[in-house]
Picture (cartoon, one colour):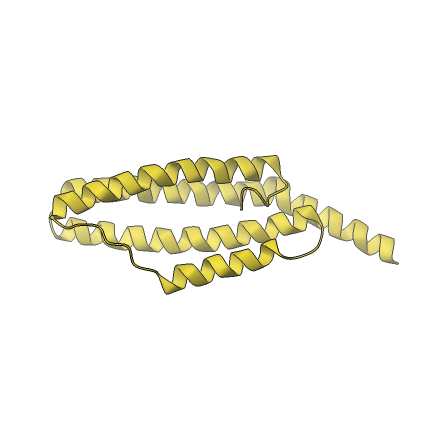
Length: 143
């Protein structure tokens, strides 16, 4: 999505989140150590569907800012899914008395929420107003 975004601010937000994701993985590895389990990869059908849906937006033709607006929507769907997951497992860690794991999961939950808020801000202040203006200009040209 970072490669497909035309907005420099949106590209930067995706690149920042990609770097954060590496830290999220490190925290998850620490959580698994605390609970005495080995992390195993498993394909999540819901996440796979969200990613496929987002990929469809990248294939669309249209004004760059309108595509960027669609990319933000797709990215926020992923963020909301991650927020729900991290919030749930953080609560389970608390209930199980795994305080360090709960703290680590809360840190990741906070970072995911910050990313979601950053995407909201980009949409509201930059991308959506540009998309609206481009759509209006395109409509005026076609009349």
